[in-house]
Image (cartoon, rainbow, N blue to C red; front, side, top):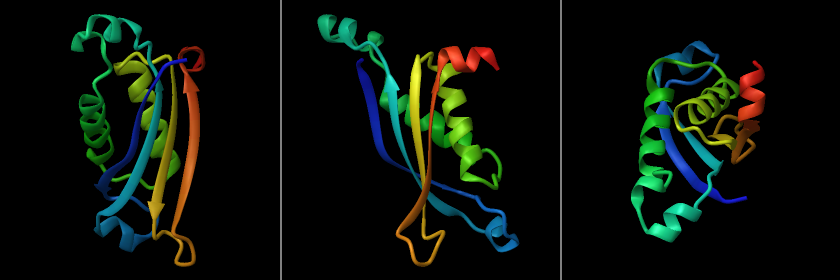
Length: 122
């Protein structure tokens, strides 16, 4: 399976369940693995057949900063749904890290995997 990967996408947004978190922006780091058939793009060297990682990154940032969100689980689901529905990827793995959420840990994170067949069943 071919994949397009984005690592360490930084998103500054209002995220958290505590009142003090709802008044500040915090940093999330997002890793994406997206199934994408790269053969036609590679064979033709034509951008129109590629999954544009800049467009994907900008859309993910836009989606997650639209409004405050409480849970990183919600962030992960929103990203997966956006990629499956708007970019027509067949499968995606999303990891959302929230550095500094727990004082004793470098970061906390959630990881999900979703596919077209699973999203169409919902």
